[in-house]
Image 1 (cartoon, one colour):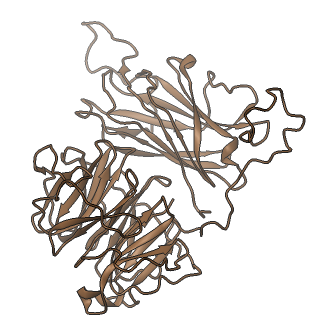
Image 2 (cartoon, rainbow, N blue to C red; image 1 turned 120 degrees about the vertical axis):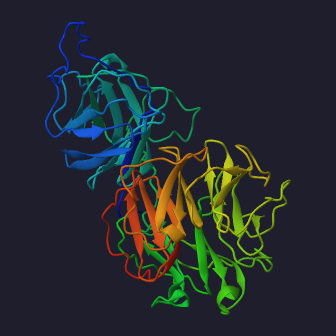
Image 3 (cartoon, helix red, strand yellow; image 1 turned 30 degrees about the vertical axis):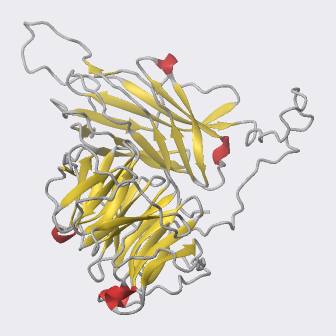
Amino acid sequence: MRAFYAVVLTLAVAAAVVGCSSGTANVPAPLPPPACAASGAQTYTGLLTTIALPSSGGITGTITLPQVVGGLPAPIGITVGATIASQARAPLSTSIIASWHMTFSGPAQQFALNYPPSIALLLPPGIAPSTLTALFVPAAAPATGTTLQPQGSGRNVTFTASGTNFSLSECGAADIQVLQSTGGPGPAPSSSPSASPGPTASPTATPVPTAAPTAAPPANVYVADCGSLCGGVSPTTVTAYDAQGNLIALPGTFPGIKGANGITYASSVGRVYVADCGTCYGTGPTTVLAFTLSGIAVPLAGGAFAGLQQPGILYVAANNQIYVPDYLQNKVFVFDVSGNAIATSGTFPGLNGPYGATYVSDNNLLYVANFNTNMIFTFDLQGNRMPPGNAVTFPGLNGPAGLTYAPDVHLVYVTSKNANAVIAYDINGNKQTLPGTFPGLSGPSGIAYDPDSNLLYVANSIATGGVTAYNLDGTPHPTGSWTGASVPVGVTIAP
């Protein structure tokens, strides 16, 4: 199980802010600030803004407000407190274990959210996610409070919903509640649907199925390290960490790696795959190696992952296939999880130095970085070039190396290796302005999004650059020292 978790509560929202009082034509300008305006309110201009939530019931976290289409004509203020409003309510057989009250202040204006806000929470030990639900109650329409069911395990639980519409007034508010069942961990799935529909004599007789705690190590961030081959101090290998950058000792040692060049996690088989470029350094063959999450080698058949020269790597869960951009051959190879080549109807045409790739679930397309031409190409999963255009705009890149997609905010993040930068774009290639600037980068290469912690992890490929973590708005997120990763070139998340 994982050592660190966060909860993401995603709300599909269309919000409107309206004035507390419209006033009349003869009211002198400027109008005084609304009575609900509070000192210390965090300014929200319509860009990604992350606000810390005060501790409530031993639970802490952050709320990330989304980017607004076209921005806001004037900023609004957001204040969050741990005192819940009077309309807060909990369904029967539940108790509120954490709650927050959000107040919105600012000039009257209309705006629409172009993707949902999210709330990331860290649960204290001992709270079973199966006992939790969440409730979002807008003050303007408390009867429309939406109950959300959990997904996930450990200390990280994701609550999701869609089609939740409500309005917020200038002096409006909303309550967020985390609810815990007072009747135990909840019913276990019935193993005999044809049994009597009446209540069981002993609801505790059938335990809730749980995952074995030894099924996976507490690591979830896996880093491909080029090591001494690229000027570092350690051998080329893979190192594993928890979400806070603490090194996790594993039973296996990821043996046989000759030149780590990329890494991906295949959820369908629970394996880490490493793009191994031995011929790049004269240390051995070039191929793809497979390992368990504990670092133990998984044998593959002879001829698996054949034909590669300088590979990157990406697993796509949508079709359970592995895509390998080859920088030297200007093409993308496609394999199944056993390393067998997959024939595609397209040929991934036009590539020039393909380095990294990511899959965007919004449009079911593969985005491939052309390192040599500073361009991003989009393809369907069969390798056919797709609109918009042959090359999506993606301006401002200088050596695009790694890509990742964060579905919660519908943004593609690209490492610009030669410029020591990470740039965010919408899925149409339009550059986004974020509050943060991704400081502290040093030859950023691989990048990965962790939906559990709602963080971005960047592998800095300049010696001693290490791994850096960021919030989705580009502000740094403090973590541990990432000991052992001397020249990280790739990073992947194993939830």
